[in-house]
Length: 147
Image (cartoon, rainbow, N blue to C red):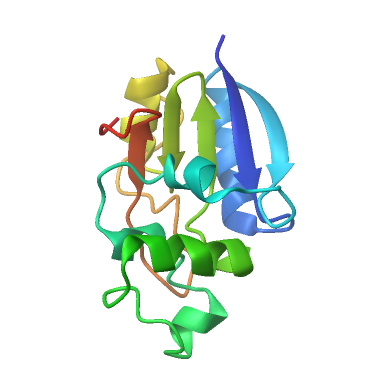
């Protein structure tokens, strides 16, 4: 059984669905508050791998929706700095299991990378985005490769 550190925004309905799926697939969860975690730039950066910077962001974050931050026009260091200042900007959940790191919830990629059962989720079901936004995920190992 794999133990997963699951960094969430408490009260997020999407994160609740994601946790349920992981548990049903056989994972043991250690749930943490994404908003109060003591992030450092190097540690946070490990969750994004080689994905484009724009995919690191939560498209539903107020600063993104208002246009105050343009995720397509920001460099990696500035993006991480903005996320450290405002954790709502971070695409969630952040998932960690051993050397594996992931931002977002791409269930097929997660199940394969973590060796979990995939029969608990129907295909085509959007498991990551808020009902108001669509999003992709970024998964990586701690070394920065795709997972």
